[in-house]
Image 1 (tube, rainbow, N blue to C red):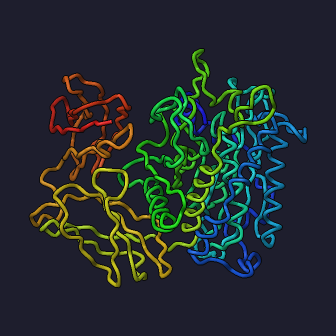
Image 2: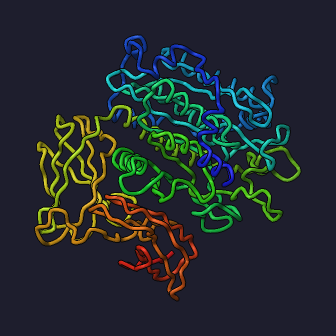
Image 3: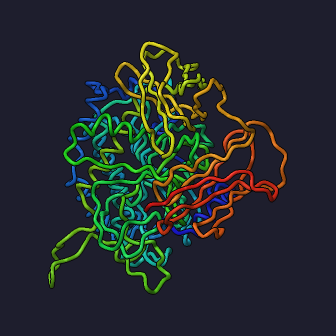
Length: 579
């Protein structure tokens, strides 16, 4: 993970990064052809074909091994320094030894699974800390149906760093950040390649994340140049630790030494009608319905409001910026905000202290570990279940949404009408669905008895195996007790903030039903004393326009937010903070 200056560089200079990367190639032609959908599935068909949903998610849950994850992390730590620009010649030290070892493990997994997994490097040229050639390591598992040529990516970066982002000789084991994410990807490649999926799945271990998300950007550039379609990206970064540091990037953990091994955070871009938030909701739903009934340690999955922690970022961002659906898994607790320039900074992240753990006094024997391997295994299972169901799921539908009076919503499926069943996700005040309804053997259904208010609704196809598609386009409407099809009484409406509150940030929306002429519009936020704490510029385009207000964990009581157009306050609402 990297600091704000690099995120700013990525977001404001994406053209420079994209154009400065060159010679992006996949080193294996077969792997490339599979990602393009130009292959005969029979060439890679398993015997037997294991593709029932319960076989997949129960197999993943039973076979993911904390001990395997531990062994991968120990090996990655042994390479000493995995900086993007570190040694590529040595067989025991540096990024070259690390990536060759990952590649060899992918070869091993392929041999164990009928040679169906295709290892390769994604090689690219870019000057990073004085070194110009770099390689992501990928393993491509061919889908058994080329009708939908889109691929699914599970990724985590392998590069590590110390206080100096270009130090290639320091002790940089990078255990939490991010041997934990790379180990997760490797373990899923081992376990998931036993099963078959309609979509191709790509297991990718990236480099160059710490200097500028370069490995993720390289694959985005490659995919766009080649015309590779991507169904979804699951990025894993800082995913195995359970200890809260003295510092951590907001949304922060409770305080120094707090332990949490039963929650995980899902970060993604946007709010209303965000495909990225839709992917996060899909991940949580699949866990709740497939795994929660029989796992030994239940996990709480928190869908966060922002795309990442404040001033931070990861390899999901280049994919989102490139127009692909992507999200990020991160541990609930995090050891450090990576502010290594602060002389008072004593946490582990982005330092030589990001190691395996602590040693027994006066010995070389590890006494305790900074990564909790059972916790990492549970997060690995959540990833695998989501990617597996995404890989065998049906096509996304579309629908018409209207209100029908008497506190009722009417849903009519208009696209992908071939399925016997659909799931309707309805949410009001949080990032997650309040309820998920099921409509069976019909293309038109109603939801009755809703309280008056604003609702966001999306629909998923549900096939004969009970597997959902990704959520459709999300539509918003007001439910009233009168027969009002649009549910709106004015052309410009200030919406209730969402979530209210859930984490350290909240989205404020403005619904515009007709084109409007204006010079300046913003959201004014005032605290309980009436002091303006933030002015957020907002656009008034037709539809729903949203701004993100990062209130932090220090906010208390009732805040007032107002829509101000050309100097005139049009409407105000309350938001309540109780954290």
